[in-house]
Length: 436
Image (cartoon, rainbow, N blue to C red; front, top):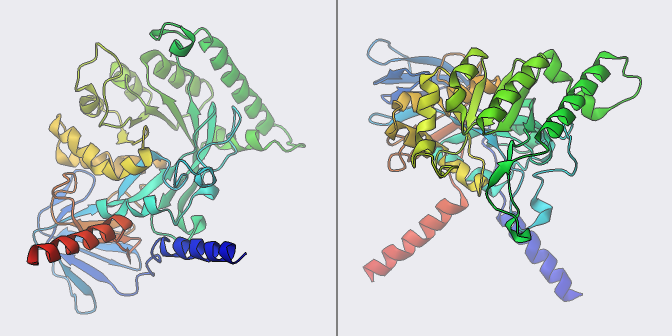
């Protein structure tokens, strides 16, 4: 019994020591950032800027050579030679839903069943996640939390990454519903002796009809007297009245076209294609239908044998040139860890044709517009949230992305993580060894 008690106390101690830092307190005094190069997030750059904010809201964004600010009552940060950016936003992410993949108790990624529109990711969001904490030193301060699994995976929400709990974290609750569109092709199961190559999905038509029937039934239920509760159908109501966004995960050309036509047939105008690997083939179609795109992870390999080796790097440029509203998303293998690389995904698109300010929009203004939070986040504008950070250099380059300060709603947040603690510990060890 003594051993059990000892183990329990040890585990409790370890869990407390591994908890995230206490969230930053509310802003109490106005702050002025002087002399930095300000990247507004809408394509505009102010070389020598002055940015002030109070009570969590930006009060001034201006050229320091054209305006005089009384900073007597402010905390002043001299950012000469540095850069200021709006907080980066993760689209279609799962941060906070899984902590350790091998530990089932820490995995709230998906639910059983095919149609789960009523499953809300927000209430499963772990605000004390060590993984979420590790996003902040790279400038990733906001994100969309999306459930996975099934045909209709559930309802997402948008959160900020320095909170006591999911209620405090929520920026936009239940912003949209996510669908995994049926695949037009399938691969043979090699372990059963089938040809592993691609072949047409014989059940594609049936699967689309099942989805069609579900939407019709949901619309009918919500138009009725609702004498009997049906939570999944009621969760769909926002799609039909325009209060929720529809996100459809689909990559192939035919699937994208079918998905857009499907949404339009149900009167759904707030539509985003997620993944969108072959979206460049139907870019004009997407533009004509005012359909936005969450583009698949940039740092990945081509899907098909005859695709150009750098196609994933060039897709953003192709879609932006066609006038499509594009944001980057990190889904895929090890996606939660790789979400911290979001700025470097954007940086890669610069090497393949976009300007730095266009690339910045892919992870600031554009996702904010798509998620419907652009009136508060995504750009450095007067009246908007003071969610921003200061970097030593170019934040889209891993050599320059070295944060000195970060703020969420004006709160001066911690940039310490388990990784930074380890770095300090072992760099100190190396210094001592070198002296010896």
